Image (cartoon, rainbow, N blue to C red; front, side, top):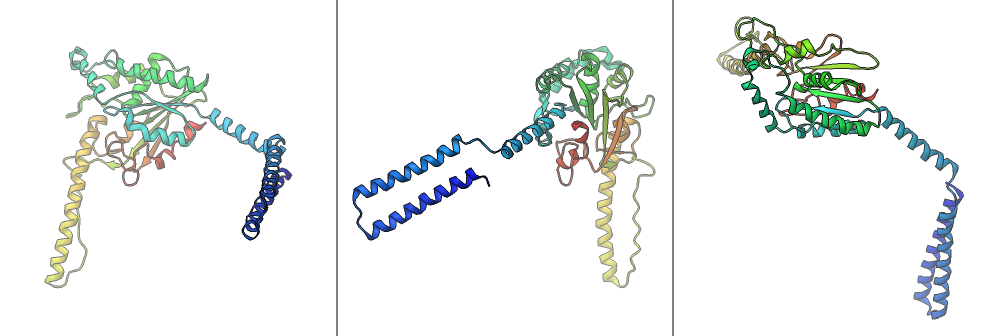
Length: 361
């Protein structure tokens, strides 16, 4: 505690003690009005002296040093964190990423999400009149010009935050490969990191029965025309895949067989075992059918059903050769339908902890 602080505290203590003593004395004796006024004036003068001492005395060197250190540390932390631009996935809107933005901000990373509504995605229907859609040779432009424009607007806003520094792009789902299209069309000079979350980067294999390219050639275009992934000091690609559920084929090798080894003795025990087996069988059947359903979705993306993925995008499709590829267990695909505890998605706080380091460098 500094001398100035002790002085002020002692002065205030004396004033309060004097005031209390005065009040007690007033209750016992009947002081004259002049004495009361004189006492009050003395108190006011002492308070004024204490306040003047506080205002006019310079702060201690230790206080200045501490404040300067804190300010420098805060400035240094802010300087090392690039602003991030979030690219929404197919069917998602800007609001779906509100909590992710707050989580990033808590780590010192400012962010902007491209302004996209769910209705905006119906603009893609314009591709239906393009013959390339039916041939499976669709290109991102002009069908997705509306999306690229929204991304560019968000990038411009982030540039103002960066004040001449670089940016990070965070692409969720289709936003990941659309980020690659954006970088190809608009340049990468301001981008030092592309981090993708559950993005289907690879086109499905050709010629497989029951497999239809749902992007109608868009991923073929991206694979052939967008630059290869790299992981260099100047530009880093980080591709994150989730392992939430393993798919299963509809026929052959997908069934889960349950064999009870519990010994039985008596009709009652047999009955109880039968009920237990029925419940377990029912649960397993539900899980099996779910795995088969998810597996059919995986098959449309990578050509295989019995692979791991985040429930929508297979793990193998979410990685890129040349990138830093990461797989996270128990991570669900989308913020819609997710739960930070039982079904966390890529942007849940606990999951962000696993990849935030790439945005802080």
